[in-house]
Image: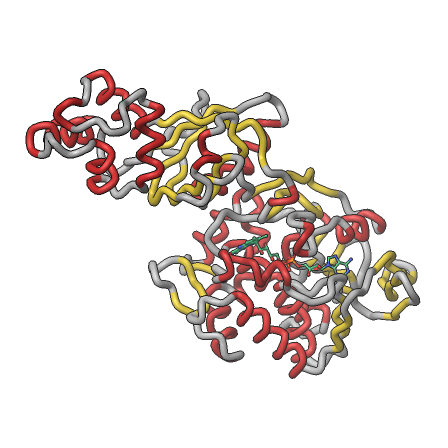
Length: 411
Ligand SMILES: Cc1cc2nc3c(=O)[nH]c(=O)nc-3n(C[C@H](O)[C@H](O)[C@H](O)COP(=O)(O)OP(=O)(O)OC[C@H]3O[C@@H](n4cnc5c(N)ncnc54)[C@H](O)[C@@H]3O)c2cc1C
């Protein structure tokens, strides 16, 4: 087993529970570093979608996940976690987290189960080559020495977030035996904006906004969710979900125009009516305070909005010029931002592309290029949006690859 992330840990447990003698090799000093950072440390493990809807969210490659989800879909995954002592809940009815809200608890529970299952775990292990015997896998060469094996699972993850173990060694091992690659691109990655003002608001978030790419041919529906300002631009679920598409556009053009609808639940006319009501009912109050309280917006963001609209930051409702009021309404419904880059693989929570699926059997996750070689997790060309899709895929594919490699799949 190569890789001690969620896919590798699950695969090791599945194989060992079915009688295989398993060694798990991890190149970092400890396994599951990326898992420990998931969901801002809370780990959004999966979600409550049924398998069909789940696969749709994985996009054009979604059906490939069907056999894995059949065995270890969201419902089975929750049972599995309960069985190893991780209670889960879905506070909003969709995103599933451990009740402890601790990603480290999830990693530790998986590791404890790995150890209970008598898997040998070796850290700081760098695999350099696959050893083959004819059309079968026969073992691996390490930086020091080698190991024999009847089956090998590559669960080495993607090249995203190198600080948490991301690297491209899994891709290289697969290519060395004839697998092809789908082009790699950072996805679920923060956006760097041309505008500098978001940096002034780093750490501030806007709840429940709608973000869209402001170019012909791009859906005006955009993406809904929270937006987070960063030192270099914007992030948060609404932005991350669009970032893969923006990264692709940025390979062809220097900048991508974006718009943010700060108040998507009301129309511009309704917002205008708010201002008019403030003028007549709360004329002596500062617009900054009325906006922050009435629209549930952070004060620092409101201050910036007033600057962008050219308003006096202390202006009271009765004295707000009509032109500035109209400009504020426009900004609240269509705040322009320009993506000039993404934070790249270094900060990509997920990488789009990877080992092409066409040479891998979805029913077993076995290679069609070399018998006895299996794949699981993000190293493959399959990825999903924010919302537990990527961990669920890692867990499910790990489980399937582990059972297949142990010869434990029902015929
Ligand atoms: C900050 C952050 C937050 C995230 N939050 C969420 C979330 O809340 N929900 C969600 O669904 N997804 C989330 N993701 C995505 C999710 O973490 C990944 O999709 C998932 O971890 C992929 O699992 P994996 O086992 O395939 O790969 P990884 O988790 O990357 O594990 C691969 C392991 O293999 C090791 N390795 C690499 N090469 C070798 C080698 N040659 N030999 C031995 N070992 C090797 C690595 O060190 C690593 O430990 C997040 C990602 C990041 C970076």
